[in-house]
Image (cartoon, rainbow, N blue to C red):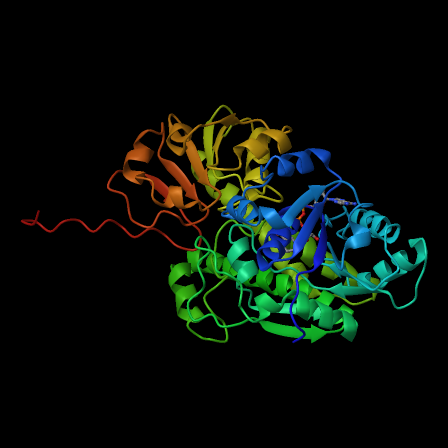
Length: 466
Ligand SMILES: NC(=O)c1ccc[n+]([C@@H]2O[C@H](COP(=O)([O-])OP(=O)(O)OC[C@H]3O[C@@H](n4cnc5c(N)ncnc54)[C@H](O)[C@@H]3O)[C@@H](O)[C@H]2O)c1
């Protein structure tokens, strides 16, 4: 390792990935400037407000604040940056390919401000295989003074999970670095405190037990880009597999939780990502599986396993609604509570959230929807203006007088709700527990549907016992 010294870093895009990256690098001791085209976001960050919800992120950005700046201005930042991270969104187009216009715009803005010295441009956004070379071309075409072999594009895909982003960033399983050897060497220097785990631990981010150091995977640009897609596709597949098996469990009287536990002890399989439920959502799995399939089709290569994973995921949302209709029948005029709006707990991210589809379908069927989420309701007010629902200030308020309930997100506070009391406030105690959060049979009469299992019957007290 060369003697470690802090570097000047620009992070372009201050969303979920950009903010985590900026916070991490500032904590490692680098001088970091976050750039975004959204002036409101930048104004918020300059005021010390964090525009997204991610546990611990506000504290990390405050603690590392002396190493952090925020701006909309490329001109004053890019010329001084040793390393420039691109963390802009790559949302899906209707045909499944990712929209690369934000990436292209960012690359052009970088190109116009390069300084003619060696600078490393890092793609952290999830981008189709071949995008690293495409970004290099954009830099070459739009740089004011073109210098061959001065601008090195590296692919360093991001594997953080929303909700546990800080732990994932400080204690990653692996760091993938794809690109020219010289640029990869620079990335190793940049990440040295992370690679060797010599940074100051944060009291509010738990270090995983038995964690040592991350693996560093050095590879080519296309392999690094492929690693990100293949990883997400595999995880999506695992969830769809669990849901497919869950459907059969329901038909044969098996219990998916116990089945998942049983197969998960096989170290080749593992326990994680085998939870049956309403299926995956969020900004990554749907987008990345579709992108991989469309890359395949560009090369005349079919990917039937991934197509099946997407179909099973789509079907799973329908399974939840079918369970509701099986018991509730006509939904017109009924009051249906929806608990959880974010696509998963501990985030306010609503992208591709199952709750969105549930509410949209309930709107179509003429039901009155009362929705609650511990964190995401503010964001939903801004992003789900096209849906009709009443906001409930608490989970219990959502349930009052409801004819049915769908549990769409497995927030911890829903797991720990006193369900015996809660269902008694409903007009009809019908619960579609699409995340299997209710773990004990209830003492009071209620119809509870879960995914891939049935709640066991309450064991009656033996005569003569208390
Ligand atoms: N969110 C995740 O959990 C996650 C995890 C791993 C990888 N990724 C990938 O990382 C990328 C970013 O995802 P995200 O969830 O952080 O997106 P996001 O939508 O939360 O943030 C993107 C940000 O980029 C900004 N932006 C757009 N164009 C810009 C430009 N030209 N210059 C400066 N800023 C610009 C937007 O204003 C926005 O603030 C995507 O490719 C995504 O697939 C996301």
